[in-house]
Length: 430
Image (cartoon, rainbow, N blue to C red; front, side):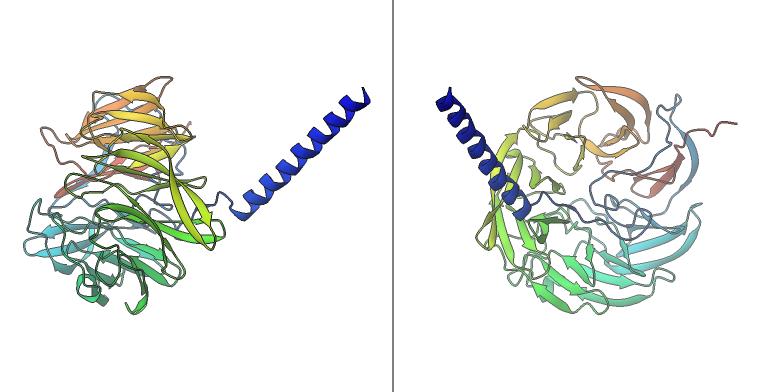
């Protein structure tokens, strides 16, 4: 009996020691979190955290037949796939008009306030504006498809400064044009020119001067996605994609921390990464699908290792993470909508009648705009998605690629020259 008690005591001590080391490791490399914009509203691509998740509450849980109430619609915005951003009563959106890339500002009734040019329109394959604007610290920022980054006065549209990033960092125009939506980090503006002098760089927000430049990734050009900013292991890290890699950069120094090769047929990686709990999720089309990369400390550096893979091969609609499930559409291999567990990569939900598209999450629902122009409100169910509303924004299309935006009880949808605003608030009880 005494021997048994000693063995139990030794086992308990060993478990306690293991728990101590486990706790020490977690303190050294905490899970971290996305760094949100300090601005109100919807000030940047995919919302305050760039994750496609809206904090809205009190929204319609189901739509009437034909869709929610249309408040207004405006046209003549030029060709483009950028979504609007909104800050303190003003909406900003871009479109290519004639030879110019144009930034439009309007009030929340769709009435114009000003318009300004940011260099040349994109006239090559799939002509039209790509990137959304960014509002930060009293200034508006935008990059056109040629890598011209402009800082504008958000009240008038007057240009404060501009930088030709491909020239400065010796980058090349990519086949379908730069589509990066800029990111602000304190006094810095993050750009990803994919050049010989820098894969990613930080500019001074006030002047456009270079603050730091990361190493290039040999043989790679810029990707088509936009970066995210998060904290992990005592670091502030940026994650994005090039033409053939996912990569991470120290946000304070610009040091290139890690890369991970992802093969695609046409060197297109266009979906913004997701971050959660020490992992970065990347998905690519025409190649290897999705992968969750676990971050790990390597001395003073950082490495990654794949935790699992999935055939989910999103092209440009991005993904959202809600309650441990990644929601996204596929492209060539998985030609439908799916829900994939963050911890395992196992597919737990499917919906096969919408095809690829983009989505955001708000108040318990997935707002899905299919590339055909069908708009759907989906409620995740045990093994699939229930339809809570559906209507056709446009019909017979294959390029309805602008992402939905939901803010202050309104839903904004864009198809090239036209922007629609819908009322999606629940009725207030009398």
